[in-house]
Length: 117
Image (tube, rainbow, N blue to C red; front, side, top):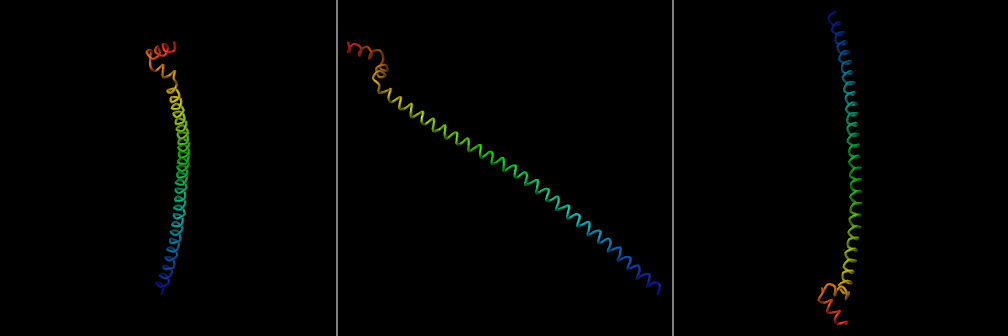
């Protein structure tokens, strides 16, 4: 009969030890889960900050590129206007009798002077 009591007490003590160990293990697992979630959140925050930084750089680059395109378009229009103006001046000069005379050289100039006199 003594053996039964001791064995029963032994089983109760053993169950208590296993219950305590199980509880400690459960708390450790819960702690690991919390730490894992914290690390995942930290990693996500770092990645989001990097993504925000890259997005800001892309926006800045896009804005700079758009400004550059606008400058190029403006300068292209200015060059086209200058070319048109030079073509108009060239057309006017090439039809000017004095320019034609000068372009003709000394012979034409003497011939004109002789015909005038």
